[in-house]
Image (cartoon, rainbow, N blue to C red):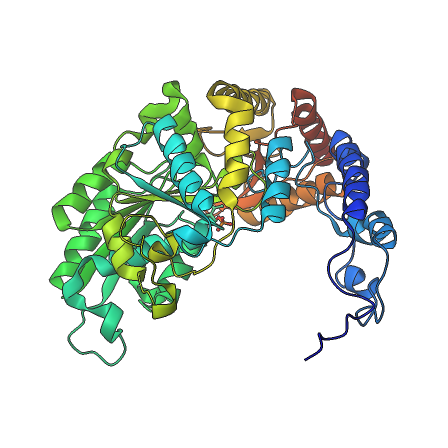
Length: 485
Ligand SMILES: *Cc1c(COP(=O)(O)O)cnc(C)c1O
C-alpha cells in the first residue's frame, strides 16, 4: 500500500512565523497595556456593529497572519470594553497582569488536557499546590482541598452538588429527584444580597428556584441570622429539609460581609452545608489586619474565591475549596473503562471532583501571578486599593449634596447625589441614573449602579492594577460636573 498523498497544505504553520508574530504581538500587547487610556472604557459600538464588520462566511482560502493581526486594530479593538483601563470602576475589577498573560501564553502552547493525573501530572499537582498556597496565605485550614474552575458560578454549583450528595440516604445521584414522593423539598438559604449564581445553581441542580430562600439583610446588607434561624425552623416544622446556606463575604452590590461565625453555628446545629461565597473579597483574608471580618470562615464546608477578580489573574480562574473532598468525589466520580489507570488510587485526577472531564491548565497562570507579585506584593496592592476607596469615600462624605449609602468594607464605595429638597425616590433615581449616563459617556471612566434598600446607588469599585489616585479623582470630578449639568 502506498502512503496517502501529502496535500499541498498540511500540518501547522511554520514555527518561524510563530516566532515573528509572537514578537510582534508582544510589542502590540505592551503598547496596549501601556496606554489603555487611549481608548474609551466602554466599547463605543452599537449592538450588531461588530458582527456587521465581519465577513458573512469563513475565508475559503488561507489568510496570512499579517492580515489577521492587522485586523486586531480595525475589527477587534472597537468592540473591546477595556477591563484593563485604570478608569474601570464598574462591577468588580479584573486585570490582565503581565505574569498572568505570560502564564496564559504558555498554557495555550503546552495545551494540557487535565482528564486524569497521567494526562497531565503537572496540571493536577500544580493546581493542588497553588490552591494550597493561597489557602495558607488566607489563613484557612490546611486540610482544605482546592480546585480551579472557570467561574464562581461553577464553583458554587459544584459546592451545592456536594451539599446535596452529603446525605447519601437521599440517593439523588442514582435515582434523581423527579417523580419521588419520598423526597422532601431541599432548601438552600442565602441573603437578599447574594449573587444570582446561587439561584442558578439551585435551578441547575433541579432543586427548584422556589427552594432558594432569600433571607432579609440588615441595614448594612448583612444576612440577618435571626431571620435565617426562624426560616430554617419554620421549614423543618413544615416537613422540608434545610440543605445548605450560602453566606456572602463581600456582596456584589456593596461588599457587605455576612456574620459567618453565627451562621456557621446555626449550620452546625441543623446539619446544613455552609458554602461561603467570597468571589470578590476573599483575597482580603491575605491581610492579617483584615482577617477579623472572616472569623468563622474556617468552619465553612466550602468556599469560592475568584483570582480573576481581585487577584490580577486574567479571565478565567475561580478557586473552590472544600473540607469534604470525599463528598465532592462521591458526587462526581465516575470512571468508565477507557479511563482506568494503574495509578488511579494514588494520584489525583480532578475529573473525579467535577462534572467536567477535561480541564485546562489554569494553575499555570496562577502560579505565575503568585510568584511574580509574592505575598507582600499582593498585600501592598490590596491595601492600596482599599486606601483609594477610603479616600473616595472621604471626598464624597465631605461634599454637600452627596451621601454614602453603605459602609466601605473593602474597596467599593456606594453613594448618590441628593440635591437639597429632593426627597422623592423616583426623582432621585432619575437624577442619579442621568449622572451615571453622563459620566460613562465621557469614555474616561466606567461606573455601574445597584439598588440598596430600594435606593438607586452609584458604585465606584476599585481593584484594577493600573488604577492610581488621579483616576479616582477624575471619576469624582466627572461625577460632580455631571450632577451640576
Ligand atoms: C462576581 C461574583 C460572582 C460570580 O462570579 P463569576 O465568576 O462571574 O461566576 C458570584 N458571587 C459573588 C459574590 C461575586 O462577586
